[in-house]
Image 1 (cartoon, rainbow, N blue to C red):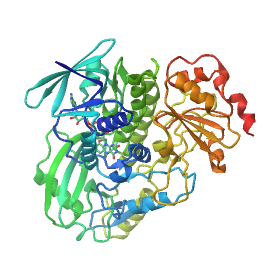
Image 2: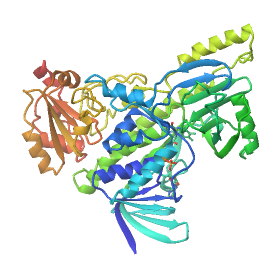
Image 3: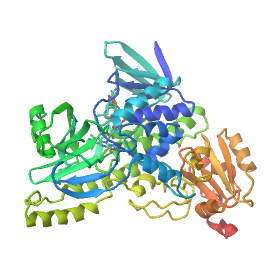
Length: 569
Ligand SMILES: Cc1cc2nc3c(=O)[nH]c(=O)nc-3n(C[C@H](O)[C@H](O)[C@H](O)COP(=O)(O)OP(=O)(O)OC[C@H]3O[C@@H](n4cnc5c(N)ncnc54)[C@H](O)[C@@H]3O)c2cc1C
């Protein structure tokens, strides 16, 4: 018997599970295969950036996800020290989760951080997502099943999967998405390779690295008394180590360079390294450890073929500095989900899914390069021999290095990278206007089509207030700004003809016009702007067909708003 689903997802990591949830929200059934029976139990990334948090918000899950990991009042600071009980070199204050939530709740109407960045380890997130996908009737789970065969025809893809206990199944799906990580079976089956950088260049965080989940009882009460932080960055002439707080109690993620051979170090050796880093003799348990390669910036040469697509680590591999790997994967899922839904539901054109690679591959290149350059900045820091000495030279070395480290904030928050991904040049983005400059640090909100819809709060400051993102529809949304904005009737009629879901939002306030600069803004289901203008274009059906990928961009300039700017001045 061949089982069937519109979409099959290979890989139940964070990207695969978020994609399944996004598709479920859009009414598309999926089956998710994952080799292991449970989610990943080893700690990896902890950073969920503002854009990822917006995607969780779209799923109605951001508040619950904010409860995961560290206690709400635990500081998310980054502390540089010579040892945990040694000299403090620098502290980058990042507040607690509670403080960030309060700041977002009371921010001004056009403040762009609707969902502040969150630190909560991926292993907690994956467990939570697994519960969520398990509750969705539209998601069929095959955890403990490995996909080992894949063939596509013009109409569908056939998959073979085998369970832990030797059962085999055959599935047919309209589309298959490989969210199966860096060793992706799907990518290799398609014959797609990565290109980019793998060379080891810096002394730290490149080449072979160890990550270990360690349990150190009583650390907060001993070496860390009064020094609570999210990340302890330990630098001294003997050792460099990162220690991330996982639960604010006894669990930490430890990262350091691995020896050049292939075997994992003995637990006793890791314990010894930890004791050097802590500076006092406390009981240490090594819960688990893994080896990975730091410093890479690799992007798949293609993001799919025919009916099969790649997302997450199968499409790009990052150096973890900057915490961009999973976040870029989740943004892939947001770009792909609505295009799959539109294709399955019949309103997406034949070119729509092709724009996934056109739009996402440049973002993957941009983000992998940014992460690698952050890795080099961190790895290239020189450690003076006298850094941990109680001499005058030691004091001077600490002041010098501390001053340098205090300025090194880009790896912990970079709103420009997080919120500034743009799809300029995509055939389904209709604009002739120059995009804002791509600044990795500062996010420049802009209504020039291609970027994320600039954010607007819809009510007075309070913790439960509504964001414009909460009002956007599951399909396209037309935002009308001001009393003299053209009627939405023509858009609604044309979208009905094309069976394209469309909602309308009317905004009358001054900040909205200042922010959006036009009377009409057409927003895609992934919250990126597809088109803007001040008047209803003559060929409205052509415009909507183009943004839904139904046709190639024609030469007609009537969709572009270049000449209509005078209407609003
Ligand atoms: C030490 C470290 C720190 C990191 N820090 C951050 C951070 O702070 N922020 C961030 O954004 N990213 C971070 N990352 C990167 C992040 O962990 C990955 O980018 C993320 O896990 C990728 O998710 P994914 O779902 O694409 O793939 P994965 O998490 O690798 O999941 C792939 C899944 O596919 C399954 N699978 C594989 N083959 C098959 C098959 N044939 N059939 C069925 N199932 C299959 C696997 O079992 C696995 O569960 C870090 C990574 C490391 C190693």
